Length: 328
Image (cartoon, rainbow, N blue to C red):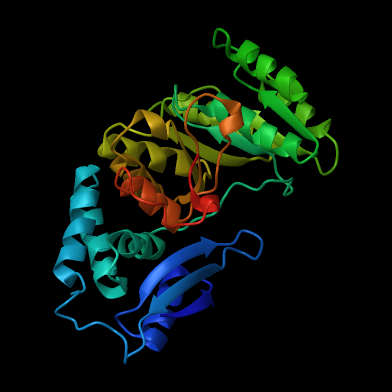
């Protein structure tokens, strides 16, 4: 068996390199998307030498129709809107290989953008926004914990001062992480709190749950973002109606949100609403979280890890990919 590794800026380009050099019979052994050099994709592929390859009749490759059917059925089972299903299946038809999961990953890479939330200060506070119950407070704690584990300074600011227990929940988590916690009930107070943070310090702002259909609520959130000069990051929990999530994402994108953190992935079996949200809001998939435990973190999403969430490995099957790509 001949093994070779290919590197390219995107999944689409990497798969094309594999097919161009090793041919249509090449099998993708592993994929890695590096965060250290801008998201470069590295694929290791294998192919049998021509003189030792078994006859096609002895081990036939999966038909293209079978691969496309698997991609389509997966997307439809997740409740993905029909127009989006057709676009992704069309992309898979052009980019696919023999593995339905990798064909789905290639289609996701073509149809969406991926950009994890910065791990360090990037000149703007991160302001987590979203509807009530989306998991913003836990996400803020996980982002802070990630910084503290690296030894980086971090301050969490709670603007969720009216909800019963909102500040108390974040305060208890901040104490466990030994992270600084401030509160800000108004845009002016938030601007002051941000201004008092140190240079190079990661600042994470937790905001009240906001009704995406409330003009007054969105205006109040916009005032907070403007005062803090913050980057709004939309937080949405898995599940829900795809059409509602599409409208919700479009509303928060109107405030300047360009990234999406998906939460509570362990509490839902249908993720089509998240695809609909990212599509409607032109949002980049950023990070994903499961459960309320801060230690589980917020792993970065990429086309392969998202494809594995949509089309999991069958129970009892060996895990073919590096552990670093798994969503914990």
